[in-house]
Image 1 (tube, rainbow, N blue to C red):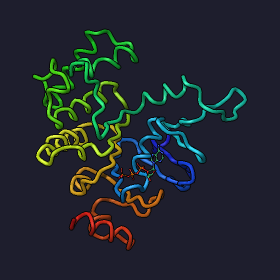
Image 2 (cartoon, protein in one colour):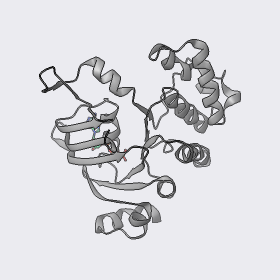
Image 3 (cartoon, rainbow, N blue to C red):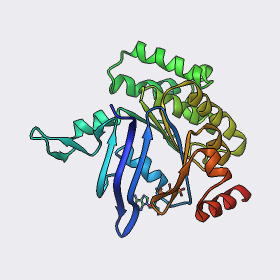
Amino acid sequence: MTQDIIHFDKVVKRFGDLTVLNNLDFSVKRGEKVSIIGPSGSGKSTVLRILMTLEGIEGGKVTVDDEPLWHEQAADGTLKAASEAHLRKMRAKLGMVFQHFNLFPHMSVMRNITEAPVKVLGLSKAEARQRGEELLDLVGLADQAQKYPGQLSGGQKQRVGIARALAMRPSILLFDEPTSALDPELVGEVLNVIGKLADEHDLTMLLVTHEMRFAREISDRVCFFDRGKIREEGTPEELFTDPSEERTREFLSAVLDG
Ligand SMILES: Nc1ncnc2c1ncn2[C@@H]1O[C@H](COP(=O)(O)OP(=O)(O)OP(=O)(O)O)[C@@H](O)[C@H]1O
């Protein structure tokens, strides 16, 4: 087992003529909490979408938990395109919390959380419900299990989104700007839950965020993305107080003053 749980090796991602990831080298260690920051359009969300297998890649290699994500080893040892079964197995290692929650509106909070563990992992309804209760407790929503998403605030919906992702017991949790669709007064409750997870669990966490103060608080490492590459990375202390690249400094002064 190698130290890296996520490894991007010269990954190229294009949309038509637009090269979004340009020979990206990037890795995350087991248990590490990493934040990705950077200007709009720099490819931050695309990294998460590739990991969730929502987007394919045009070049390079992505490895998750020591196995290639988009390829699998044929009997003769060569790599071939991944089968649907391989992608399903790889996807189970990852959970994602989306900017717009993506809850099922016609299902109760509890059913939003139990649906995939029952259908995909084969848990009994009782087991899934018990897991759901524990997770709702963790995110401070034990009393909301029977409500529907439309009856919840944005902050509550996002906390359900976090519980739903955790219900699949992923080794890696991805967050795609989890607070950017929320009213400012609801941001804190979601950041508190994510901060608690970061402190108390050995989950690997990869967070795309515009919340600089939060990235600074919870991350072991912060990566500054610019035009599909990591322009600079370091501990929060290094990156936020003494960035070495002019481009990082410009970005930080724009977002921190703005
Ligand atoms: N499905 C798609 N088809 C075409 N272009 C896309 C698609 N998805 C993303 N892009 C483009 O790829 C670039 C990178 O997008 P991405 O969402 O990764 O950026 P980002 O750094 O997360 O930006 P933001 O902070 O605004 O969310 C953008 O220019 C975007 O318009």
